[in-house]
Amino acid sequence: MGKLTDSQKDELRKYLVSQGLTFKPLLDEMADHMSCEMEERMDEGRSFRESFSDVTTEISDNHFQQIQKQVMDTINKRFTLARAFSFLALGFLIISTLFKIMHLQYAGEVLLLAFAFLAVSLLTASLTGISRNREKKGAAVVVAITLGIVALLIGYGFKIMHLAGADNIILGAVCVLVASTLVNTVYVFQFATGKGNLLTFLHEKYTPGIERFFFFLLLPLVVYKISTILMTSEGLPGNMALLVIIFGSGLQFIALCWRTTEKDLSKRDTMTLAATMISCVCLLLPFLGPLVPIDVRMVIIMLFNVVAGWLAYRMEHEPKRFVWLLVVLGQVVFIGWGLIRFGTIPASFHSFFFNLPILVILTTGLLFTRKEGTLRAYMVIVLSSYLFEYMM
Amino acid sequence: MSKNEFVKGTLKTIILKLLAQDKQMYGYEITQRVAQLSKDEIRLTFGALYPTLYKLEADGLLITTTEIVDNRARKYYSLTPAGRKLAKVKISELKQFTEILSAILDDSSKPGLTMKVWAS
Image 1 (cartoon, rainbow over the protein chains, first blue to last red):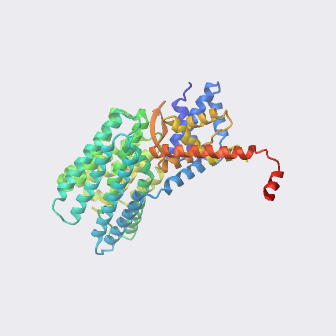
Image 2: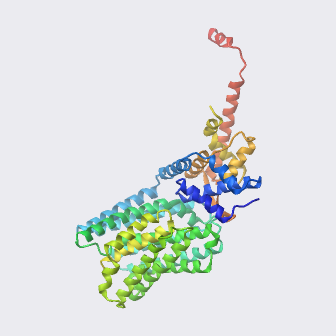
Image 3: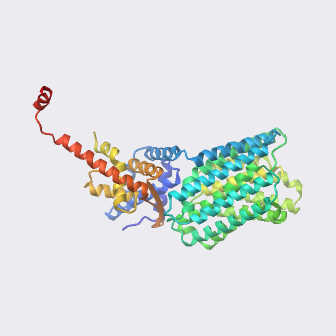
């Protein structure tokens, strides 16, 4: 049977994107369906160009957009308990940040409520996913990662309440998360067929919701930060909501790398495996806080930004040419930040790396990478880390 | 009324029936099987097939797995236990309905019968 070449497959995908298909699972499915149809026609003696024309001329204008709308409506209509809890968590995170900005009482208590709903949402989504997909493998890793995140939220909750044992819980949570993400990374690289891996399957299902959650949380913080810079008033130093975004988007970024590796054999090499493992470790270790010496933490954060930037670019199929400039900007800013903290370059350079134009460029970077999932996740991490470190 | 409009109301059952026979199928395979079984009388469009597949999946009747075939991702659909149960029910309901429909369409009784019934 005739097979489409990689460049022919690319042409088909570009056509589908030009038709307004943006939801990746549906895009993949349509690309496979149309490839099969074209290959069948090519077997009958038609050329690639003729088959392409045959298949695409049968399709009316906006047909794919209509299908995508119907599919998205179906997905969005599923008002699950997990979704309800995540909305509550989002609301409480925003309220807690507002309380902090306005120096009101109970900001900490509201934040604890947000953590509780976040944990319940995650547990509900994971347990439902496991029970509905018993045929798939990897339930243990899903449980481990879920429990790791929940334990981390409990640990930080203890920290906010100044309770004893917070550091031990956080240490345990980070160890579980590092171990389980590394195990899944190796599993994905060794047995990457995408068949039956529960973790990546569930992640694909929840991706639109996860992205919306972090976007809606990050946007008001960016607006607030820009307004404080313009009004030269006091900004919001290292905020817990930003830590939630960095952590969540970091895990989102790693999960997207797993999924790309599962579906694209060309991405499966030693360098990518090493970069994914380094990203897992370097994302999670800084959440140990004072348990890791500050100098070591800074090196880890710098390393994460450089390695994850490379990995994000590597994982994309054909990113826009100028997008690498955004990646390099993210890497340079955090190398500069580290060197200032280490005293290698003078502190007066802080305003060279942290200023309104760079903040605006990084924010618009989210728009430019809206069709590139892994790069966008990286840009969300960079932007939220940038906001977190701006006043430090 | 075109064939497509008849298919619309029964597509869910057709998909459930095909998946009940074959353990797992992908989108293109479903369209090919329908075309083959209907002797090319029914050609499923993207717009009919995929929203229905996503709806069945969202309702917990189908599960999916993705495999790499010829270096591209292929999504396979199969029935969940709830999907298998519903498939039996829907197939039996549709068979019953087609029998009723056949009885109506094949009815060759004379118009006078109606008056007879009224008169009795």
